[in-house]
Length: 407
Image 1 (cartoon, rainbow, N blue to C red):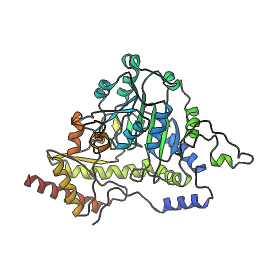
Image 2 (cartoon, one colour; image 1 turned 60 degrees about the vertical axis):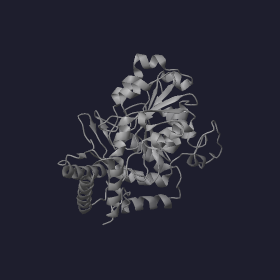
Image 3 (tube, one colour; image 1 turned 135 degrees about the horizontal axis):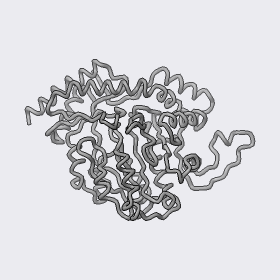
Image 4 (cartoon, rainbow, N blue to C red; image 1 turned 180 degrees about the horizontal axis):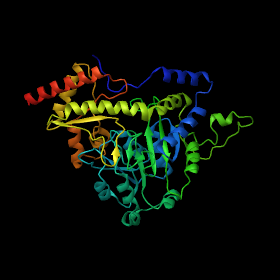
């Protein structure tokens, strides 16, 4: 029984919608992309949405808009995917890693506070596995008197905000809830991912949700980023094809990061059925795992719901008590022999060669290092069948117990 880790849902509805987009004669950024943006804004309960080619491009465009440059610092968790840090490096700035909470993989607000300096321009919390970060605490921290007093604004945007920007990497958490609000409107700016393994996929893609304070116009930000993400060109392809609309200007040396209508067509289908279909199915899979594993003392189950948070059930991140990294790796190999594909989320960024060579060391982030050593992500996707879930659980129990006995 071969079980992949997280294949996308590509059913007849998706195929038909993509086919219609292809046959429409308009496959780049156009009406489907704009509709997807509007539908996402409604889904999030506010803000203004711009769809892009990836979440990574969204993060970088925001940093560049805010004027992040050499000499600046951006605070982010040591426990995240490399893209969160890479975009900081692209801008010439310094990633400042901090440790995470021991129970939920989320960035520690206490550690953020310790890391703030006069060079801090942005904090990038990362929603892990589908659970949102502690945004009220983070928002309060950047707005407190002490943080604002050491903030050193250098650009017009920084002066206008008057404090550190909070840029949420919500690649995992579309559809999650925090204190009655949906992710996307929990802080200044949020970036979603629609990569192939995400709950809602457009094959590749992402979106920025602008939710800035009243001193900014989210509508104007949308317009500016729309230009910035398309070479700085004042008109997109659809606008240029209108009668007499061929002429355009370039006001800034922008980037190429726009989403296409072919990708948006997938997103439109998935978004319509996301809350009522996709999320309940993923929750069911998570519950099947947890109900089977909660009786075992060695199983540290992922947190999916608290008094103020509800997950989007993106990653079933199981930890195995007292497992070492080699033991975890052995488990992954044994499950692979049974044709069950698992994963690890994530290798802490200071463990990666590029960042090691820059002087970072995972020993300074002991919680992230410990979480990594015994984490294994189990398959969780819409088309995962009950018989497959049972086989995964049975195989997992057999292999964990065997490794424990040998240790």
